[in-house]
Length: 286
Image 1 (cartoon, rainbow, N blue to C red):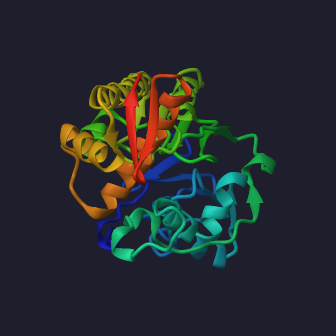
Image 2 (image 1 turned 45 degrees about the horizontal axis):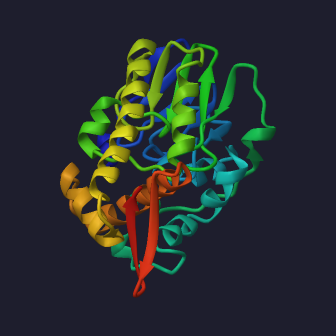
C-alpha cells in the first residue's frame, strides 16, 4: 500500500489501536503488532519499544527491521522465527524447496528479513498476552490486550474475506480447526484480524463458525472430485474452477499447498488413498 494511503491509528478501545491496510497493523502501549503495511515513517510520532509478529509471512512483518534499526525488540515464535529471519524459506517451501522463479511467488511471501530478539514463548507482559493459534503457519500466535482486543493475525477470516479470496491459505487443516475452536473459548471483546475490518466478539464467533464450515466445504468438494482417481494437476484445476478462484501463477501455488494439507488430513482419517502411476500421483476417495 502506498504511503499516501496509510491512515492514522484508529482506536478500538482503551489503549488498543489499529491501522487499516492490506494487512492491518496493531498498536498497544509501545507495541506495534504485525508491521507488514505500516513502517517506521508512517508511525514516526509513535513510541515503539517492541514489535510483535503473529506469524512469519512477510505481509505481516515487512517493516519490522525498520523499527529494530531504531532500537525496538522484535518478538516472534520459535517456529516462525526462521521465516522472519529468512523469508526465502517460505518461497522455497512453495516450490518443493527448489528456488522458484520470482514471478511465480506471491508478494505476501517476498520482503525484508529481520533478526528476532526474543521468542514469544519466553516473553511476558501482564498487559498483553499471547495465544498459540497454529494452522495458517506452524508458529502463529494471537495477542490479547488488557482492553479485551484480540489481534488474531491470519488465524481467523471473516465471511467478507472468504467471499473475496475463496480459499485463505493454511498449511494444516487440523491445526487450523483446533485454533478456530480455541478462538471461540477465548476472553475478548473485539477482534482485529490480519485482513479485513475489526469485529465485536459475537461477530467473531460467527466468523469462526463460518471458517470451520468453509474448511468442511473444501473437504466435501475434494471428496466429490475424487470419486474416481484424479491426478494432482487435474484436481487443482477442477477444484479451482469449482470455487472460481482467481487465476494467477502465485495463486496456483497457494492452492496446491492448501489442497495438499486437506488431502493429507483426509488420508489420515481414512477417507482417501493415493497411487503413483507412471510418475503421476492420483488421489481417490474410499
